[in-house]
Image (cartoon, rainbow, N blue to C red; front, side, top):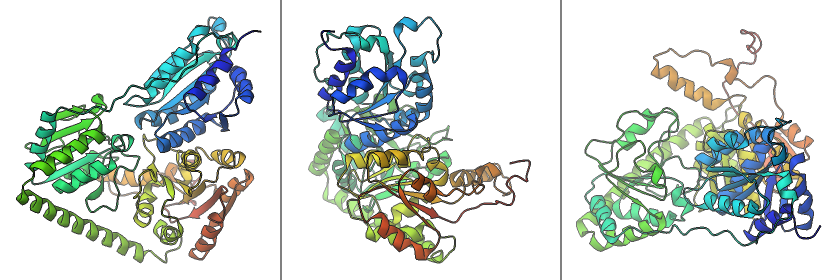
Length: 568
């Protein structure tokens, strides 16, 4: 057969666009281009044993590289498995290019095995979903999808590639996808207006999200905060947008309940929002979240997020890095000596408050230092000094995240990533993606015992491809986050505390994560006492191979009630 088929041409297109990895799980209807992969060794296939694992590995890789990642999914059952992970990728604006097979256009009217409206399934969890119907529109459709995925606001896309379309001769030209340049800057008058508003503040507050990291605006953001003496809070942030040890960084707004965020949002007289939206809690505040006299400024490349839910006075759909740089220059040009003195005073006061809060947290840690089962703070107290400064973390520790970041605070750009979008299971596959993007660094993935069981088969991928990520299971025998949340619910509903719902209790049967890891060829150790910590850490960091620590932590569990109370 003369010429190249769509199976060959699509792989050449991916190589032209710089893809080096394809994360996937194979199926029969994708056999053509998976067979052709042998002729294109530059594109490495990272096998996962479930589609959500493939999506989450790609999510970690895309977030680390700030480039699109390629995912191969199976037909209807496969994309069904991937939906939850794709929801997370969409909420986190991860530029994933997902391709999926189908038996063929000629079978569309047969209602055959695995038949489904594939784009209808994928549309709610992607930025763009489509099917290729003609053999000479394969590459143009793929390039369109890549462009959409990587143009702000970035997000996952899906292209269904029927087997019979890819099996035909393809006459399209291969050339790199063009990504539109969105590095725009507002007019000078808008920059001057922003500066004037900020310089009129006595209580300025900055709210920042991952739009800062994606435009590489971390330094510019920090400079603006320092000039005006503003508290800085992360909002719906999964990437590192500012050194968390900086005197002005004050943590994050609430994740679950809007009432947690209100004391933060209502104290500002001028607020600058950059690269996020206000506010993304699960149970958000329905009323106003600002002081009635506050001025609200917003910079974002995603126009949809500006004034989506709450009032904004002035905004700019522009690149955060360029805009913040211009704003810093304007502030320095027009700032009075008196204002500089006031800003410096605010910096000192904010730093003192942060130091006091940290001292109280460390004091609580010290009180729990000899507890058995141990607290996460005790483990991190020993792990942190042994990690290289440039270690990279994927944090799905959730309720144990405060202790993790207290002892190994995220400081360096590209060194810290956390779960976002509400989907469990990203900690381990996300760490694998990070390790592929950072092959010469120590990469650790933290997850809970509940979350890790969603994607524990990711360990098989790490072993198969010799990806030396390190995995820590924060094993407290429970869905601790649900326990924390129901306490807030009881408080809101004025319900006297009761025993935790047994569906939050994972203590029966006991899960041995060290044995699970070993069954997939990953070396592992169980840590149950303080005396075990040092040896486990030494084994974990001794080489560049995958390794798991099953870390047994304190938890609110009642194994004696499981199976007794109403069969729960």
